[in-house]
Amino acid sequence: MSEASQRDASLGEASVGEATLRVSGLTIRTPHGVELVRDAHFEVSSRELVVLIGPSGSGKTSIINALCGLLDERDGAWQIEGRLSYGEREVDLSASRSDMCGLVFQGNALFDDLDAGENVKIAADHAPLSARAYDSSPIMSLLSDIRPEQPIASCSGGQKQRIAIARTLIAGHPILILDEPNSGLDIISSRRLAGIIKTICTERSTPVVIAAHHVDDLLPLADKVLLLDTRSRTIRPVAAEIGAIERAMMGLDLEGESALIAVEAGASSPQADAWRSYAKAGHPLRWFARYFAEYFWVLCASPFMLGYLGLGGAILGFVSMWFGFNYHAFGGYLKSILHDETLAGIGFVQTTISVPLIASILVVARNSAVICADLGNRMLSAQLPAMRNLHISGFRYLVVSILVANTLSLTLLTVAALAMASWSALQTWQVFFPDQPSEFWQENYFRRLLEAGPALYGQLGWVFAKIVLSSLLGSSAAILIGLRPKTSVVSINNAIAKAIVIGVSLTLVSHAFFAVLQFWG
Image (cartoon, rainbow, N blue to C red):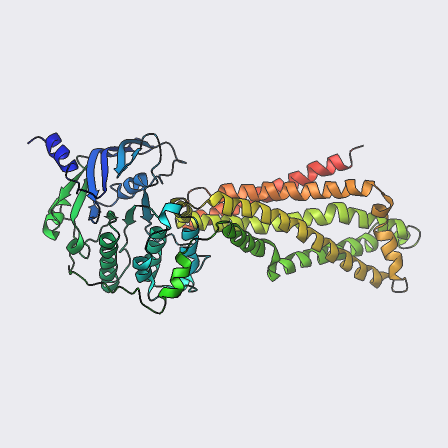
């Protein structure tokens, strides 16, 4: 029988009454023109667990990202051909992205700013309506030993992996794909995880594809094994035996102990009832409020940030008053004859120019670093692709929240810095003039603003324009730099430095531009 005939026959073996995942004519070329796979065909039936193997760097992750619609094209355009079908749905991969496959990322890609329950809840709130009728009991069995309020950082590797699987299942994709799910797990955790995946596969009639290097714990449960052949650039079946895999992988050492494991259901554990409430869908709008509150706290309302801007305002108020009266060439005249005019000038410049500029520099520099570090970490840990795979709008929740929170932050913190600078200026002035009443300082320090009448709103408008433009430009630069691909902690550090320099530079230009317009003529 010819190869084409064998392929056509294999594609026709789908079990009656159950949907089958079919991939046909799959060809993938990287943006650099490297062909990863050529005209590949394979299928995975419902209740079937398939292991995809291949040498390191052969393109397994790129292939599963293509099936999940998650290839990153910022470094160039990928060339993809082929069709993916499941039941009555069919996707032309050359024309559109597939959203049929739910991906459990290598490294989990959990949202580390959310606790375990919130990681599941956010997926439930964004799941399609058709997915919300699923029985959640098999999913609850994944989480039987995890408290919903448990921080992600305190979870073990196996717990993190099971949370990631539960989150992906809750999102309602009909097909489950896992990238190196047993990476970094000990033998016991790896075997337990393999058993759980197989149980989900059979109980939910879900086709499962696992891309893995270490397969000895998966083979007893695998229905078949597919090899990404780097010589012929095809995907072909191999026997689900260690010896056959070793020969197919050209001597790759995959020694390991294989054993079939029983899986504890866990659906009746003490945590099950608590987890069921997290699996119920709610309104997604709460997550915008959740992320906005998180960013507003770290960018504005935290005690550290308030103290930081308060210190800056206090120093500026002291310096302007101390040096304005004490070290000016006409200091004697300023303290006597021109006392009131000096106060009025210092107050006007400090309120409309100095404090808004210094506050903008301090806030933009610090918040650019925070924003870039946050988004850079999300890029490095694959959290943003995970959001897209879970139907979660990263732009709405992250980018919009950051822009709004940062603009509100700079506005409020500038007001706080103005208040602190004025208080500090008053205390410093009273050192020079202990016999003068504070009313004299108040009348003259704000005199030019109060005498402006209706023009006061124009002066405040210029100050507000400086603040808003500085915030938007600084945070936008930090967002764009933070969202660029990250390959290591060093790349995040370099991005942070770049975001600070660009953000502060844009702030200086913005304030200079509006200052010229404000006092032109």
